[in-house]
Length: 364
Image 1 (cartoon, rainbow, N blue to C red):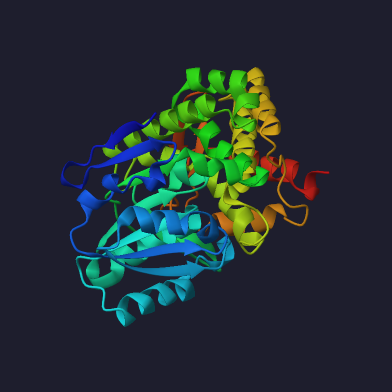
Image 2 (image 1 turned 120 degrees about the vertical axis):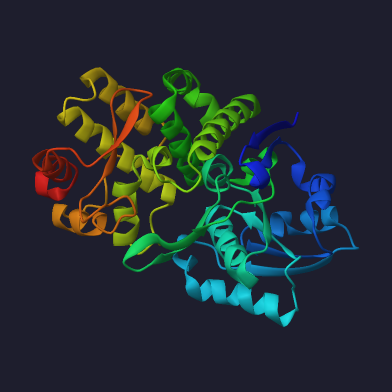
């Protein structure tokens, strides 16, 4: 059964369709096309599984080109963007073309950034095929690429016309990718919905077992939460930053490892645990609640510690290159209880140092 949510952004509003078999439902896509051409951007893992089905759904009367990228976060850069621009220009795509992102978060972020900047902006559609992309990166219009000095430091806000989350694609998802998506689902419970966090504690085994009803519920609640936050603060001037719980720590891990060994959701999972520890150290999160966060992170199969090679000094250096920093002051998303988060630079630096030492070899 298909569920439909709406991201309410006035003239830039768009639907999120969630359900099985949606890749084959061209009738959900075709009415949104302004022209008769499309460029599908996918990767070498996803293309053999779903590309032909999406092409058939679009129909033979739509001129279709494709770009198949290498898989992995290490390719989320301007060099890869250039290969997409080249295809658009070589095949004479005009301002009425549509870019379709078929894949996970990397494909979606790259495609969205190219769409935001090609001829100063063309339409794009998200067809996310990973759990993380379905519950997080495909919704909200954040697009971008990584820089060797920091993750997502080059980008633009550019909303899709449609998000098509086909839950059948999760059947082919590797276990690590499933856990990475669950990390972002846990985040929504932590920042805004204590009841949902409790539901996750009860249904974690069902999610890991890919039970369709549990997955559909978790995806719907996650997308609704993100849609509500984005509608309130589209360009992250305030409340939207709570969606970055765990991300400042997590982005430091991804940057330190060269974007090639940790999945984004794995790094966010570790980052959320570090944020919870710091929140507890500041007296903002009760011991029992910290233990609940720790238990759920463990049960989801997420790594509880950063790479053993990282040091507190390296964390601080990389965290300083963060979009939430203001006037050279680090700002973090921290917990004030389960279901409540705050964006703040008002924390004891000694507590942060203690947290970093606890989670790295320096504290061993």
